[in-house]
Image 1 (spheres, rainbow, N blue to C red):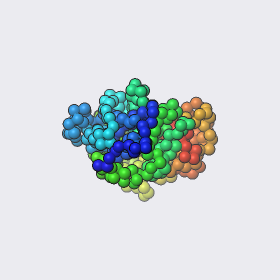
Image 2 (cartoon, rainbow, N blue to C red; image 1 turned 180 degrees about the horizontal axis):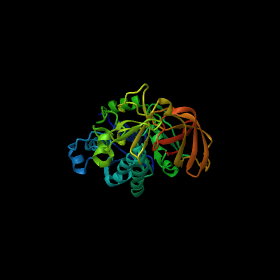
Image 3 (tube, one colour; image 1 turned 90 degrees about the horizontal axis):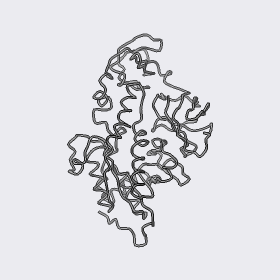
Image 4 (cartoon, rainbow, N blue to C red; image 1 turned 120 degrees about the vertical axis):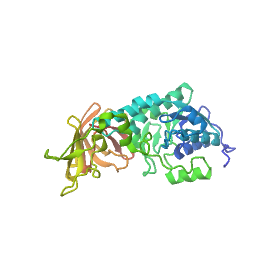
Length: 372
């Protein structure tokens, strides 16, 4: 492996200590390397979140069968091996109880209510970043860092990443301005191909590791298989009705459907049918033609503001899925943490209850909340 010693003309930054969250993946591994090369005293911290324990991590044994990048025992070992390779200390933090209470349980409950949750946002808000900052504070670190593709400026402000195909600012809108002032994203100006190239050049243990999937705690059975194991009543069948209220079939449990879904409804019709809504009080699935999925208005609650003013601008760009491009919108009837009317300038596909709506001015994230 290439030597990781600091160049002779590069001295350790006085008082500049960074604690970086390391998942064992290529992004956080390269981010840790970059911090050290920039002269920061750097240490890594990995979270035991789900599906593994300390003994398995130490033994480098993935006997629990979990293969997801963030959560399995093998990933914890990869993080430790990378830290050793680049010459930094590495520790583990067991936050399984907090992860269960603040991420897993709300995830399960949301599907039971017909809501589409975002567990990555919940984890960032309640587990990863708060515990990373708490650990940094208790140990006298100046900053925290992760391998997310985003930019945190000293203003403080949250900006989109240079690599727009990998930008993860959507998942970070829940962070506070105070936390952002202590946060570094070393990969914010990097592209993913260059990150992989550097990992390979350095022969880091993770350099061939595939991308992690969206829901880190869900195994190969998918989220429906995961939910059925934790929520007995969630598999209850019920009526499928059309937009006129006519019963046209039977669904296999509301948890198996999402708003906007077309495949898997199992009903022949003169035109394609899509899931329009779910009524959990009557255990009813509502389906209809495509036109009923396109929306121009929704309400957003629990808004976290990331601009140093109490007023959000009326004209914004918004996205309510991480992979969609941001689209023009107007925010009307904003009261406290609620925007009662987010008006989309052009109809958009299937904004669903529980999804995060994130607002942008140019490449700056100005806030976000949950669609209700």
